[in-house]
Image 1: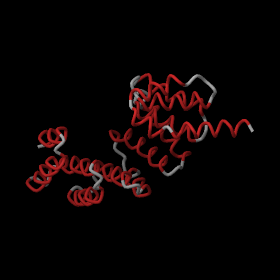
Image 2: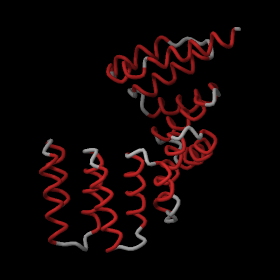
Image 3: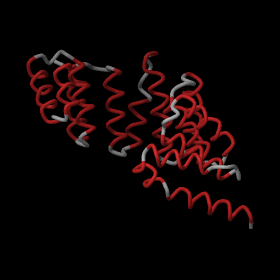
Image 4: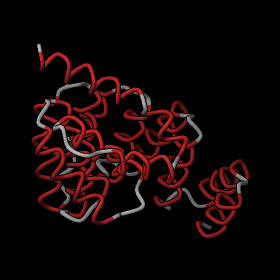
Length: 218
């Protein structure tokens, strides 16, 4: 059933994929994976209310299931309900979910602008997964947020080493280079070339760095 729903989703038939999983859950309510996949699709469609309702019903059938806790945490994160997201992530103890838990704890604290806690979890996550691009980017973001451009550059460079075509890695490395008075134009050029829409969304951060540099000169 998952293969059929995934195939529909990839083809762009989002509602078709949802309908197949709803039918599958009605037919075989003891199949946990269908709940988790449907919740992921609902979140992608920004229907977090239905995703939460689905997962809460799944918890009744599968009490204390940590995959459901994780999915609930990501649902609350998507809804910007960060305290509730943290509550779900902190329930997770399974070793196989620890890397995901650390990343999401760091992301959630970062979203709350609690950069101290975010940094602690992000660095721990990076130590466990040093070649994971999104983890390196998040660690870099945490250091950038506290103005530690040298350490931010280190993690962004590691992300770029793993994904040379990453627009975020190039753009953010350009920011740290700019903040440190280093050559940066090539990074921004690459970022714009690789993802013009991303560059346009993030371009305002160049002004933020320029303001920081001017403030430092006073």
